[in-house]
Length: 76
Image (cartoon, rainbow, N blue to C red; front, top):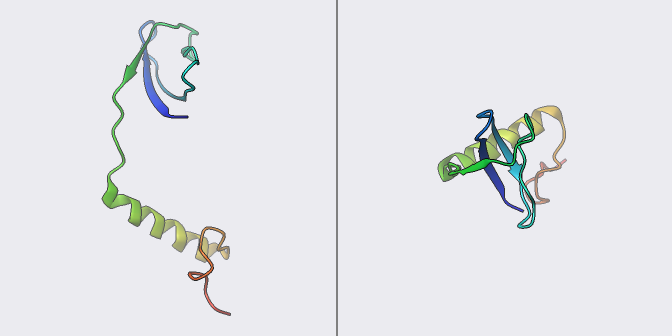
């Protein structure tokens, strides 16, 4: 199920939505079906490792390691 960005032609509301191929997209603000699908910016690959590293450091500070693999968890 891909995530798409849309803009309503009636109220110009910007929103994103997970869409099945058979789903009729409606504006969540006004209910209009006159919608333009926008080109989404891809996430830069260089930031992915930094984001993951930051999330793991935050998890370690909070004392949980649920997003670590067994080999990455600290030995007790």
